[in-house]
Image (cartoon, rainbow, N blue to C red):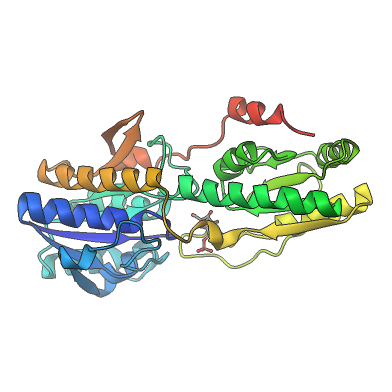
Length: 341
Ligand code: F6P
């Protein structure tokens, strides 16, 4: 068989581990040929490929990023996009395609599967917001980075008696903020799912100062206050229509400083959370997803996404996988709220 693979959307630690597992499994167990498409769907539209054999994937397991490159190209926002994809796959004799991505990349895969393309999706996103899988790889690494940052910020914040606001990634879902905030002992954790009360945030910070320690506020980039909006720089949108986020941490720091009368600084972790070597958890999950994707290809399970349920890797229809996002439930937020203030 000739299998194509692409990595779309934002990069994340563990993508190379998937590529390696797909190539190792496909070539050694099935004598398949694997072709990589460069820069996500852009490479499929343009027929831009790179051969992937055993030599090409040596040493990839611990490497962050993706050797294939990534982009937010959306074939359905490009002229004749679907037809161009079909033409490339036919011209290159691709029997099966393994798109590795989040809601956007897999949303395209789902539509292509309906158009007859033999797709098997692999979920990835540091945001961990795909509903059909318990975890996506990259999330554990991002939480580790954010937790380490919070640990470090506690000591410098306490030394200077100032509030430190840590802005983490999380467009629609606050999983990184929730986990890193709980692991790092944050004073307040703010997530997109729950518009926050500015007065309550300030009160928690004041309470923390009264105890002789300095507050750490962890805020998802997509979090917003209830009622009065805070001004953040917005604007640019990607090919899937998502606004580039960022700035809530700084806006929040200004309000906290004004109202507590103590200095407040914002730290934006940004792409640091997406870079670097994956944790062992993410390497194992990415590897298992890669193996399962090749098995799905060989069982002809088209139009599915491999997913983690408990400790098992299962298959779910792509259409179901992209139908809704996994948001932080009220009960999980209530757990971290116990530690506020
Ligand atoms: O989708 C993952 C993610 O890291 C989001 O948390 C974030 O909003 C977005 O990607 C940033 O994307 P980019 O690097 O393209 O600006």
